[in-house]
Length: 120
Image (cartoon, rainbow, N blue to C red; front, top):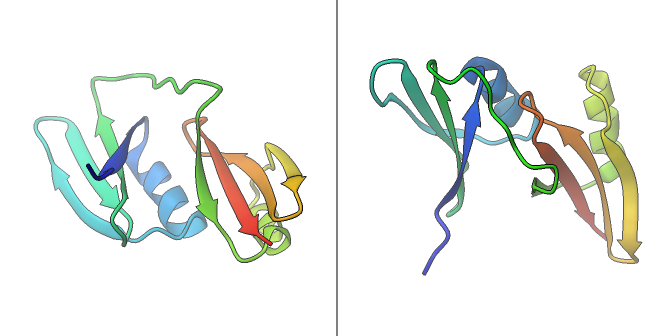
């Protein structure tokens, strides 16, 4: 069995797309309409993708507080500076739970925790 994608319901597709494309650095794989008022975008270059779904009929999305998506970065310090340069807040961290891993969190436009991880 192979993991295919994580689906994220989003309130504003363009705002979420800018975050995952411009901040996280994911490329748009494909984008299409999936029915009246529903648009889907798949992002990512590798095997595993992120699927953003915007359904105009849904007024709110809710992610649990205990869920996050992690993305590897070359430098936590550089990524934190980039996040601040973009006018975004650091949600938590940086943390270093062991000598080999350092990370911090931001919130995506829908309130989902995004973890940027540096493997030391």
